[in-house]
Amino acid sequence: MKKWYAVIGDPIAHSLSPFMHDLWFEEHGIDATYIPIHVQPFELENAFHSMKALGVSGFNITLPHKQSIIPFLDKLDETAVIMNAVNTVTYNGRQYIGWNTDGDGFVRSLSAQPITRNEKVLVIGAGGAARGIAFALKRADFTDVTITNRTHRRAVELANDCGSSALTLKEAEAALSDFSIIIQTTSVGLAKDEALPISLERVSTGSLVADIIYNPLETPFLKAAKEKNCTILNGVGMFVYQGAIAFEKWTGIQPDTEKMIQIITEKLGGNYVNR
Ligand code: ATR
Image (cartoon, rainbow, N blue to C red):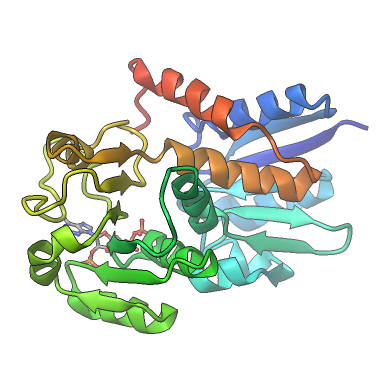
């Protein structure tokens, strides 16, 4: 029987996940489909029970349900516990298990670049996304990770939790040339005219500067990094790899991520706007 998967969110119409997973199902001759479902917060519990009753094989969760889905699940993987947020649910025939593939998705995207794990990494931000990435960097054996954040207390908390160190924004700006990998995880950059989360004045030429945002493809932060002759990495890779990890959990198959990054980038290169 045909299997079905889904992504639930509010809004959901512009999610690229259905396109991506359907293409992977097709490529691998898997008889399955992946549908976007618009679920408003007050309907989340009903929606989850309905999906169970209708035999969903697995699903993704996007804003604003990543935390509120947790009470309904049978079990959480460590990745979801660390982030206190779930973006992927698997079903093993008995239990619905929550995972968070965002942090590992980012690190896989980063690891596809010519870098080594002993380079000095600066993570800007201390919210949910930064938390997922900081722990995933540790899991992937990056040895030198520093967190900086507008609210310093949150940077210190995250650094203590994941065994890294923390700097104030001012300290990080002053020491920026020490870091060869800089990862921007805040929401600054979603709006065109927003300021940069940190000044790139002292960044070293040739550093890798990454942003987890993929729409726009080039945030003001990445533009500024390019002007400083840095290598830039946008959030398309993270988006594709977080989906690929979910796909692997559901099907046991590793999909073609490189081709998908190209396809999604081309799709976003036009006038695609999702907010
Ligand atoms: P997410 O789950 O997407 O990471 P979040 O938990 O709300 O979202 O975290 C948002 C992050 O963006 C935080 O690091 C936040 O900094 P504060 O802890 O100081 O709030 C950061 N952020 C948001 N707007 C910012 C801005 N205008 N300048 C600098 N940092 C900003």
